[in-house]
Amino acid sequence: MVTIDHDAVLRARVLLLGSGRPSRAELVGAYRVLAEVSPKAYLPKLVDALLALYYASRDPKVDLGLAAEASRAARRMEVGAPNRAEQLRRALDAYQASLFALGRRAEGRAICEELAEAGQSEPLANVLAEEGRFREAAELDEEAARNGIPDHSFWNKVRWAANLEGAGLHDAASTVFRELLEETRRKAAEQDTALAILTWELVHFSRMRETVGDGASAAAARREALRVLEELANTGEPKNWSCILGWWRTLFVLSGRAAEPAASPESPMPPFGTELGWSRDVRDGFLGMLPGLEAEAARLREADLLPELVDVQRRIGIRAAVREGDNPYLFEERFTPHFDEGVTLARRLPDNPARLARALADRSMFLVAARSFQPAHADFAEAVALLHDR
Image 1 (tube, helix red, strand yellow):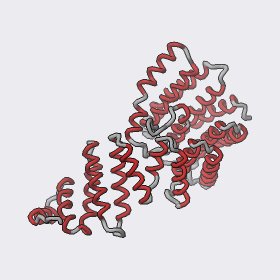
Image 2 (spheres, one colour; image 1 turned 45 degrees about the vertical axis):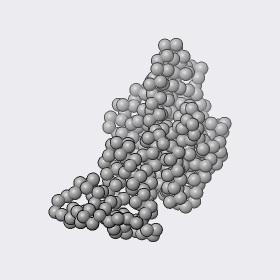
Image 3 (cartoon, helix red, strand yellow; image 1 turned 30 degrees about the horizontal axis):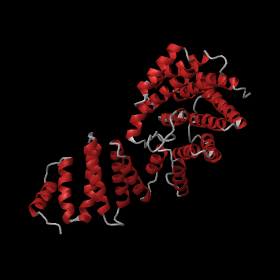
Image 4 (cartoon, helix red, strand yellow; image 1 turned 45 degrees about the horizontal axis):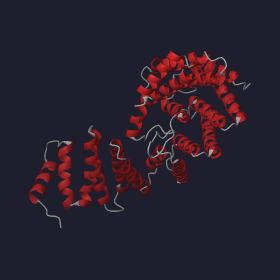
């Protein structure tokens, strides 16, 4: 039986009815007290107040406590209460993120499973992908697609295709990605999406098919991408678009998955194919590889081991994209050195046209993101010629 502190209840009501503006912490304190006497009215307010304090915090341990309390409060709300499902999802999402930030993966995964039961399967799919459980992640993606959740086609289909590919189901992955391409072609024709996005998707699809030895499909996708690039070089985008760097970054980072260590529950890796939703411990670990990669690049440069150096430099560039690839401020100036160096090094490998073609394609897609369409077309035309697609 809960003992009610009537003085505390009175103080809480006076605080809320007063003319001053309570702080976030004061609101949390008041709603904690009032939620015990009027849960139907005040539990929703307590959840919102705890999450507001959570979003303002920068202390991982404080974050965890606030998110855990918000989750408990949301679970206590009456089933069927207005906004209960949404508040529970928000609270659980904050809770799982806080657990992963502290490296408590088993507990975080359990909360993700609860989230999935509440109708939000993306965090669990990402966690499974981080642990190399791609088939299970793809099954969640398929279920979400059948239910129409989420409805942002690029993001859910790229993730779904990436998870299928990670599971070795390459034909199924290509089927999903082809559906995305068809939709993007239609939208581009109606000027409802950027030609840049269509180009990035075509180049990524060509890589998917090249991986499984389907050279004909890969070449056809590259030729189509070259035609779109020619249009961009000649006339530019038919419409101005807001920042679309996230599309470029997602596909560029995904293209580097095969060069990274395999994901496992003991050694998780990022959920390639997603822009957001990486567990903080995994993201920190991925970026934490940078010093080692830079030291390896210096050793390879000293030993003049160019093929290996080209590959390591690409892994470094992918991490730069993860860290700040969606920031438009001085975007071209910041990233040009990464891609120029990749092409310069690859040109020193006359007997390795595939590496040069990859470096040129990488730089071309970056230049598309920077809206430098004519140089992008020139680079990609050279890549296509190297691969004898014409």
